[in-house]
Length: 249
Ligand SMILES: Nc1ncnc2c1ncn2[C@@H]1O[C@H](COP(=O)(O)OP(=O)(O)O)[C@@H](O)[C@H]1O
Ligand SMILES: [Mg+2]
Image 1: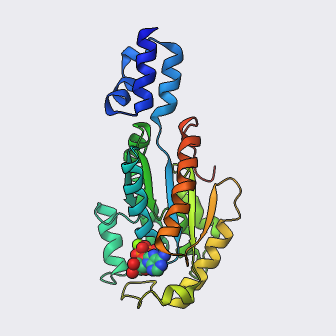
Image 2: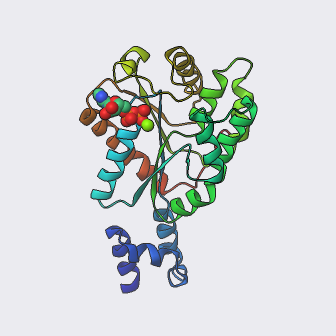
Image 3: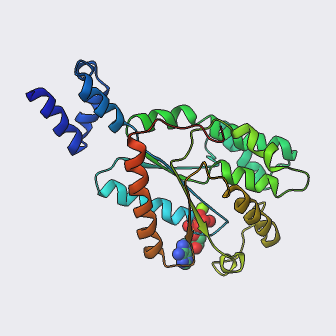
C-alpha cells in the first residue's frame, strides 16, 4: 500500500523520476497503478495552423514556455523541418533555388512529416506534449490550392500520421495578414495564393473527427495566448487517458 501511494504521489508531482517509474518493470507489478501511470505517460499533440503571418510561430513559442513553466513537459516542432534530408530539398524549393514537380513537392512535405513520426511517438509516449507549428493541414491546403489537385489526393499520403488532439486554427483575414509586413521572396508568399489556401483550410475544418478550435488571430498576442493555453490544458488532460489516434482514418 505504501508503495502504491508513493507511486501515485510521484505521478501527481509529474517529476522525471515518476515518468521513469511509469515505464519501468517495477511499476508493472502493480496492476492498477500501472494503468494509471500508463495513461499519465502520454503527452498531447497540439497543432497550430493558419495562413502566413497569422501568429503561429509566436503562439507556439509562448505556449511551450507557459506549459514548461507550469511543470508540464512540452516541446515545439515545426513543419517543414528544414534540417532533415527531405527538409533540405524542401528548403531549396521554397527559397526558389530549385524547381520540383508539384506532386513530387507534395510527397516530399508528407515524407518530411513521416520521417519525424518515430520521434514524435517516442516523445508523446514519454509524456511530452508536442506543440507543432503547421502539420498535414498546411500540406494539403497549399498543394490543393494549385490547379488540378483534389483535396482527397492531397490528403492520402498523410493518412495515418499521429492524429492531433487539438488543432488551433488562427483565423486572420488575408488583408489583416498583409498589414503585418511585406511578403518575403519565398514561394507561395503572395496574397491571391494565400486566399485560396484559406478556402482549402475552411474545407478541412469541416471534418468533425478532429478537434478544431478556431481562434480570432486579430486579437492581441496576450489575449490569443490565454485562449490557446485554456484549450491546450483541456486537450492535454483529455489526451492523457486516450491512445494516440491516426489522422484521417
Ligand atoms: N496577435 C498579433 N497581433 C499583431 N501582430 C502579431 C500578432 N501575432 C504575431 N504578430 C506579428 O506578426 C508577424 C507574424 O507572426 P508569426 O508568429 O511569425 O506568424 P506565422 O508563424 O503564422 O507566419 C510577426 O511580426 C509577429 O510579431
Ligand atoms: Mg511561422
